[in-house]
Amino acid sequence: MRDILDFFAHEDDFPDLDSAGAAERLSRAVQCRTVNYADHSLTDFGEFDKLHALIRDSYPHVMAAGTFEVIGHHSLLITLPGSDPALRPCLFMSHQDVVPVVEGTEDDWTHPAFSGAIAGGYIWGRGTLDIKNQVFGCLEAAEYLLSHGKTFARTVYLSFGDDEETLNLGARALAETLQGRGVTLEFVLDEGGGKIESGAPYGAPDTYLSPVDLMEKGYADLELSVKSRGGHSSRPFGGTSLGHLSQAIARIVENPFPVKLTPVMVGAFRALAPYITEEPLKSLAEDVEGNAGAIAAICAQRRELFPFVTTTIAPTVIRGSSAACNVMPQDMSAVVNFRIAEGETVEELLAHVRAAIGDETVSLRFLQANDPSATARTDGYGYAKLTEAMGRYFRDVVFVPSLTAGATDAHHYEIICDTCLRCSPFMAPPEDVARGVHGTDERISLRSYAQGIRVLIHLMDIAAIAP
Image (cartoon, rainbow, N blue to C red; front, top):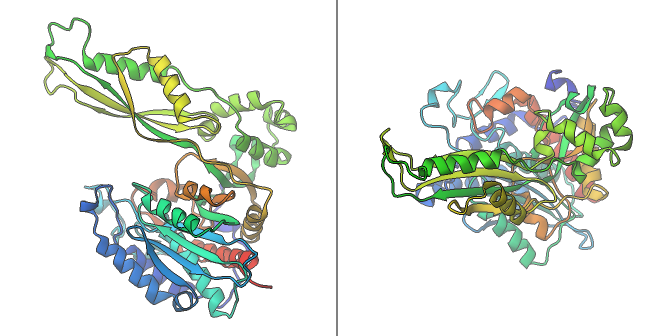
């Protein structure tokens, strides 16, 4: 893999960009410990207030040109009005909240997790990759354009939820607020992608690609419960609750969901077809739709592509086991996490699981569940402008329509937008993402942060500024 910085282009654009000041502002944002727990009694909302004050103080042109609203609990909506009401607005979004540091790992950090240290060519700390960099990058871009006398023709919204990592109520409130005001959007840009990777898993080892995520897989936490009287382990007539529960989990895992090439992945292979050099994918990609089954089967055998072609199954939690080896457990439960493939539903998932278990003594209920998101358009204004901007600042990269196996806040905006794109311009090496996102030593390089801001300046300019 080439160094991520080797792909950077046009770093001389916007020569008066205050990169050092931008880094310092992100550093101060990291120092705001905006960890939002599902149990709000554990959340210090004073840290969100500090972040809001930092935004107000740091971006005077944004504050002068726009309106600053706190929506719901602590979500933010900044409206930069455009001059042409015939143009549908665009919305740049991210989230203010960050995940906590795992207890006991605090000393594993090179620099403390909420220090915002600027050292060794990096900004360090929780939120530098997930995803205060995008919150403040959007603000930096808007401030730069406004401070240079630019005038918005298309209204621009900057929308920052406060609980993406937990309840997602903030994004829902923001989207519903806009819907209530009669707003429909030209496009939404949220977190996603943020990486440049080898095309080798797709049979294109000489090509580098970057995903533009068009949709999110569905999400489900399914709880399995088995009740039992317990008792002495010498009399396990009919089996134990742990045995029944284990059997149910095993049957779910042993009955995987179908493997298929979804429409988004058809688009990915069509985009990559000219670059695929390895067989059998080279020949198969000459007719992606006709060979969809064979391509999907190959994807299912590759770690990198497996989540993109099926609903995944991950048992994650088990509760209620006995504390003693000679005592049978009583009521037990487990949770299996599913990421639901495009074209499937929560109801279909439940039917599949019930049939696989085949045991009515195992109770099933969703702790939370939602269908896959809608798929963003690739034939419209938003996708064209985004890929144009990304292509200017990252050379030798093929931008590929893709999907995210995780979840973001973007799907809440589907009620007012048909082009919700998930693509962060803040590129980081795969090892930094794997280690730092929700982990230890989260950091972003100064050059990566500045380059992402350039992308956003250019995108706002070509998408929203009056000619």
